[in-house]
Image (tube, rainbow, N blue to C red; front, side, top):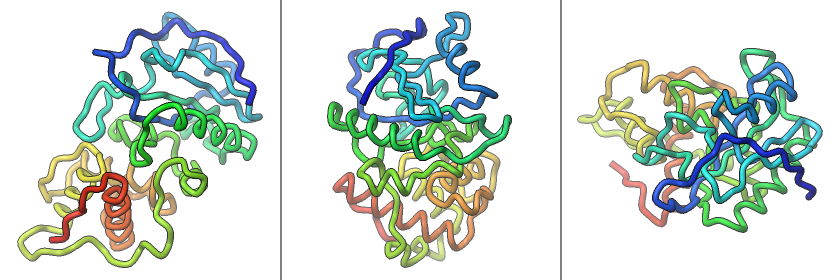
Length: 250
């Protein structure tokens, strides 16, 4: 795969020599590809990613993988902040929700699959840590959004996505534990930043919406319903297999 170079000045060293163990996918969220790449290479913007993929499949390298690109911002996964120091960031050209969100073209996804397969071959990134920007920053971000083909990527060995047969049962129930608290426990186990309170609040709703965008894209409501409970249980079990760490039944 041919990769073009157009260097961004917005990067620094990874903190404390952090190992790369996370891949974060974004959409550009700007009206045009030109506007997006100009911003990613503008020193005044102080934002960048390692790679940029246009809708025609053109791949541009903006920051060397060994360096810390500035793409995730305030973010957290599995209780860890400074996602930039441990991740590779890829921007996909798409206007996003504010400028006419649309499906990702096949040429763009094909290029992404080639690139991510190469990246996973070079770095020890577990499937459970192939994430969207909205996963690591659910209160701030919606990208790459509900039209991103996570299931297709997982079928090609990039990331996790449950197959239909895995959706067998909702989350375990305990009379002493509210259903929403069980959902928060599952979200926390998967990696999302969430407090286990069992009480409806804006943060848990945002995290549920982020989960749905990734794993249940036909119902991005931010609400816990039976389908979301079933899918949470399936994803938690997939994460358990990837971690070799049991998902506890209550």
